[in-house]
Length: 128
Length: 128
DNA sequence: AATAGCTATGTTGCGTAATATATAGCGGCA
DNA sequence: TGCCGCTATATATTACGCAACATAGCTATT
Image (tube, rainbow over all chains, first blue to last red; front, side, top):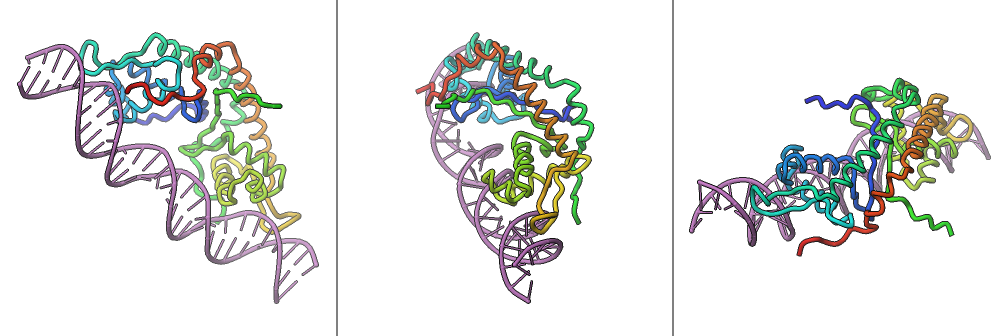
């Protein structure tokens, strides 16, 4: 518990396909979880989201790219479940690379000026 | 014809104060508009948002930082309206600087790998 | 005193997003 | 053959963000 992020800076990189998000922080994490757990439903459970939500995210991804990122099969055990395609693996690692580049740039002395004046919690009110 | 097709990449920098957003793309634009127009309501009108919404954004900002970014006064003309404090001006320019840094980093060859496989519109469905 | 334009809030209602529930089919396995 | 866990999807229900509306008070101007 207490998953308070260390930095109040949140930089999110999103790739749009029309008005849908083809890739973003949450979808990338889901891909990692699918890779680790071998199915959409197990990945969703591990991330505390409903199967439906996880499946919708996967569906959006598969519809937004030239090839599917996630290959699925019904049934259980071998052949069943979901796994990343080679293409999905490539997209994920490319996205992570961009994240690293941008994140690195963002950790510069410029930050100090901002973060040091930023309250950790908002005050209740200013005027009576 | 300035038909520059917009990049599917969208990078947004947000600074959090608890679960509220202390600074982000929209709030920074609003600060610019207040600077330009001299009041919250005129800035809101110029940006096509209600006075209430604009005021709430300003209120959040003022509560999230150690000092207020926007100084306000009732009434009209001299003394009335809203203007940026020196502190608000500093925060705004610092935020813009980080935006520039990050934006520069993001325009790298890494992108090509991703964007070339990204559809401009999502396909309708994958399975019959 | 009346007016105009601003700040500063409370309230209410609606459209949409998130979530829950239901169902159908597939594939191995005991 | 019957069961389990998965994919895949439809439908219903709940939650919630947001916009619209209303109101009150302040300040300078006429």
